[in-house]
Image 1 (spheres, rainbow, N blue to C red):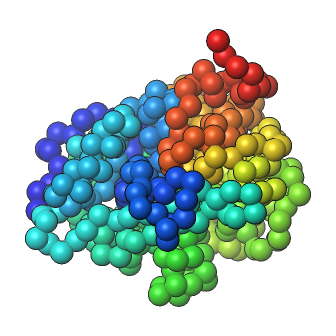
Image 2: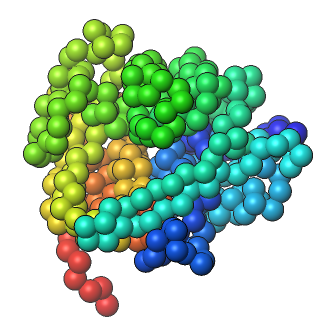
Length: 362
């Protein structure tokens, strides 16, 4: 097994997570497909890839890949996405590990999108505390992003995510945790209650908690982004009782599924300094492929967090409102293209955030 180079390439933001191959049957069904389009994807990775390709940040990924042609296919896709791979831990092809796969149907009309993951025994799921030299990996980085998908892979990845968040705090690197609950990952690990306990513990170590609505008591479908803001404010005020000292910023998307091809979309956030802040609401967003839209929202918010951090100031209410607007726009545009990742330019994101339309650009 070989490790990363002794001097990883300098980056601003890092993701700790699994990168899988996504196999897409296009307009067909998984069960009847005869060919698939290949993409790369993964909840934590998608966010930093959008930070790289759309927001111009220098990004990298901390993960494990198998040193075989499939693993190097993933590596090439990640490189093409502008994300540094010098922190990848390469696992020998004879070690019994594999590359995780994710089969995704886009959905159409009354038929919702469907994801079927095949990731048991993947190289990333075998990562464990002690596998990563965090002092070297985080050297020069400003931010570390991880989440509940990676933590849900195995007992050892849960422990590694905690190790990473604690190391980042020790080194003065800001952090984010995307709850991003996947029920399929927790069926053999205690179900939703066990996942929530892990998420509360890890989220309590982060500076930004994304998908924070999933940590709140079940409240049914919320009617508007304003309701999300109210729930986040309540969650923040009760964090001591729920799981210890709360993080400085809670963020969550809002979505109403009209059909597989039409979603109402928005977001809200809360911090002790700003109170609840509500982003723009976009109704009847046309959806080609909704996977990854929440990760693009995360990228927009994290871009605002990184901008404020570079300026040496906390993210004020107006800055948080702008970050939510960019995140909502990036998420909406991600729904218009196939694959997990955001293909929008920063100019397109800014134009939509400023109230732009879908008129033809000539």
